[in-house]
Image (cartoon, rainbow, N blue to C red):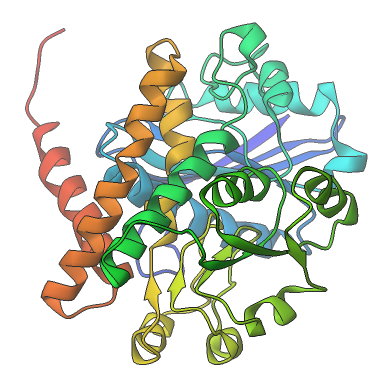
Length: 363
């Protein structure tokens, strides 16, 4: 097992990460990168993504962006936690094993509590249980092991609250009844989001390349509409578009084709590049910043650090409605894009509250 730490590694996003750690265990096939963006508010919390990146450079680009997003997400959610993220390079369907996950746990443990991990794309609560056999800094464990279980439940609930806030901001009503909502990706989060929407009487249109996920959803909600792919979905007549798969969903082409007037979804890093938020404004599309509305999952696993209580965590996640509405109103008042308003609010909290940690408190 080998590790290489690169403190204060400059990122390509115009900011500086506190620490980037490259982890390698040849025997198990583990190749991972852990990125800590900020611990100004507390230990960095963020999930572990297991994904078959084309190259280590692609994995590094992703983990740097994701860890920065986690710092802003945790700050905006009002948590006393910093931001970090990890990626394991490889196909989880063929590479994942007990030995690999436990090797990864040893690397997380070596950071001595600067980083707490959890589930993300390609990892599940059962994986966290294995990681926890070598590491005490793990959240999102199964209920059987005293954990919060599947964090996608409150992630979807938070996105739903963000949609209600966006509707209130744009249409002066929280009701989604009768609204046509397109959901791209009906995996862990998307399927729960569809449940909330159907229960409220929304007309739901979905797409997902994984046919079994679509089939399972149709068996539960036979009235939903299914389209071939995301390109077809965004051209459907929609009121709300919910990207719930991987990042980069809002690019130059997709924004021009988009019919929806609200974008509110669970995917991380939805804006494909800097400046794209201005085009959303020009087209009159209200964008609920992804890391604002999808913070229900991190709120759920953060609650685990106190001894998990689902009802308490759900009450905290319900406040995503207030946070989203605050961001959108701040953006309108300042004449800036919602993504910029959210960044400013998160940066202000990291700056003001983080400063207090410079004051020595004896233990």
